[in-house]
Image (cartoon, rainbow, N blue to C red; front, side):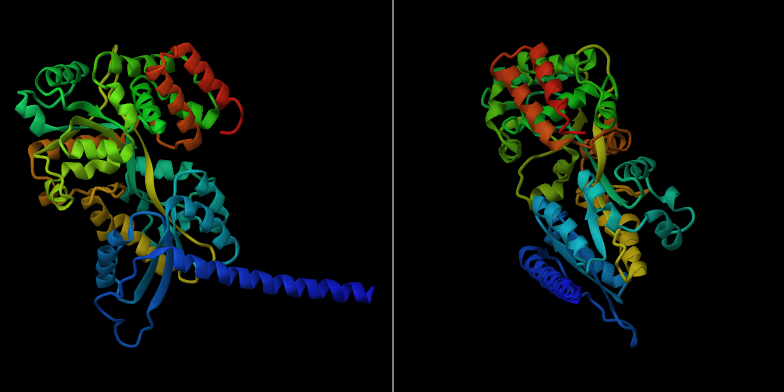
Length: 450
């Protein structure tokens, strides 16, 4: 009996040592594989007050975006140092749960509004109490209402402070090409058909609409945008496992197919991936481009110049109704959220940083780079970022769309790719819509996506 107890104790000690070594190894590997965006700041701590160091892990935005944001933060909070580690999205989804489980020294985490959020929820501090203590009793009035509503949806408890949202899909259009053709900015589906028709006659080498059709998820996004003009069915599918096999979804695919039949989209888009479709539009080889609002920097002349995109002027619109009457709309959702770990010993300082990123200059800096539509109430981009009337009107249109979505863009990514493959068959192989919807519903009913 005593021997068994000694063996058990020895095994327990060995296991504890093993876990410590593994945690340390994980930390070392993370430091080597992540990209750090850590600036020392422009000022040292006042007097003899000790500087607090925070560790933050995220996947977005990139390190070069973080550097000026951190410098601005240090001007306002000189006694706080933030070590930001940025990982590729898929690596991030794998690393963070392990790091939180093994007690990695992390104070703040970027929260993706996917199943990832629910996975790490047990390790995050409830946000209601933190907001009341460090932002104020009226904190909810300082954020866009839809952002708070969405943040409360992604986990059982509210553990995510919303930084900003993005939506899909929108149509970007090249005003330089349209003016050259004697056309106005499009508003209706008939306008899109006219653009395609005039291009075919006068500029046959210019694609009417570029989209990364080779990556099927983009096609799924278009169909869901068309669906949202009539109904919020997607939310019922996403949260309640409702059926795709409805007249509204069938009509959305029919409208999608109609765009190819009318020449608004051509089969050439099926050879384009995301990067190539953006390149085609940026080079003036397409009059229009379909992607999410995360590409809305295209509206900004100074940012286009910085990226060496030689387009005269760019506008943005939602997909118009293809058939019947519908309200042009997009699906949107929180694109960046921030959470405080339960193990953090510096919750006040962590909330100082979250307040800066959601309600102060940090939020403004992300907005001015068009990375997200900030969740803070009252944000407006700097005047120099939007120089044309078309760009200004398009930005206002985008904000209205993002803040008033037809449904949540809370995607089931793996299902989206499968749906995209079915939609490719509709266009390239002539697969009938009834079979397409049946295949999609059958896949959904496998239970993999609940």
